[in-house]
Amino acid sequence: MNTILSACRAIKADAIHPGYGFLAENAEFSEACSQNHIRFVGPSGDVIRKLGNKIAAREAAAAVSIPIVPGKKECVRNPEEVIPVAETIGYPLLLKAAAGGGGRGIQIVNDERNLKEALLRAQAEAQAAFGDGTLYVEKLIKNARHVEVQVLLDEYGNGIHLGERDCSLQRRHQKLLEESPCTVIDDGLRKELTEASLAFARSVGYSSAGTVEFIFDQDEKRFYFMEMNTRIQVEHPVTEMLTGVDIIKEQFRIAAGETLSISQGQVVSRGHAIECRINAEDPVKNFSPNPGTITKIVFPGGPGVRTDSHCYLGYTISPFYDSLIAKLIVIDRNRQDTIRRMERVLKEFEVQGIATTIPFHLEVLQHPRFLSGNYNTRWIEESFLRGENKASMDEHFADP
Image 1 (cartoon, one colour):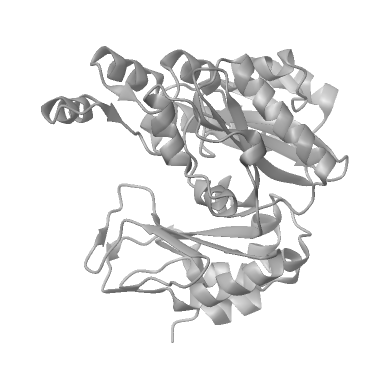
Image 2 (tube, rainbow, N blue to C red):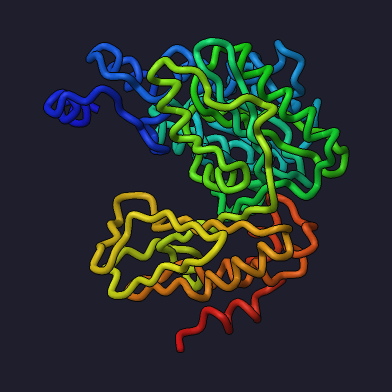
């Protein structure tokens, strides 16, 4: 933080946009920017701190009558505090970091036998990632979809939503592919989700771009509040492609003390969009990071295609940072045409020198479960990567 602030002072920066790294949700950093008379492009430190604690965020959601996943409101420190919760709501359970985000500090508990071990792992991961090992517990929704709503609010009480994104294709709680609109909710549920998201954001005094995240129980057709991310999301281009709204530009307008440039009635969503996260990981070796130097890179293009990347020929992928090297986003008239377009551009996206997840995405896009929309947040790990598609994957990933 001090190094970044020193650089800002040296060039007399007016503002800093923190991107979507950990500093984007760091209350101390937001406050340090203010103390140095640098505008932080995001919410205030107080709001970040409140929403960064998942227990406090759940309480805030319940206060405005938004359903939360059954669990324990207070933090848990040992197995003895979890067992009574399990007796009430049943297994499986999720142990989650109160200060968490990005899928860190989460452990599934299937029964009491692995409770102690899972709790210790979650505490250690939470402490290492966030400097805070506090945990809370909630019921694991087995047939769940991960659905989030993009909101924008300025300092004058104006607020809009830009629809929802489905982020259910995950591995180890890390998103792999996102799409919009969500195929398993109807217009009535969509209205409930978006209205609840704006109501929650307003209730906590939110200002900037934010994402309210929900778990959707496909069996019960109910949604539950999960958390609010106080930063721009990796997958925000999906929404930008659908609505034509430049979310980053709106963030700067809000930070500059201006009003939103668009009202809710002017937001129009057209078509269907999908984003594939291209990581420097080897799917054959359990998605192990694959650092190295890029010896060839060819980005795809064409109508309805957007590629966001920091990479270039000769770029060296470091082992010390996130393995994301590019985001590939496409849009078309409907989901079927969008999938076909994404298949085409993935085949045109050429990277040599490192292994990437491009072949994995191609297999997913061609799978009947994905094509039908009949999947949940556990499908990739529990079915797709455990034999359901193994023969095809092994052939696809084999070295030529």
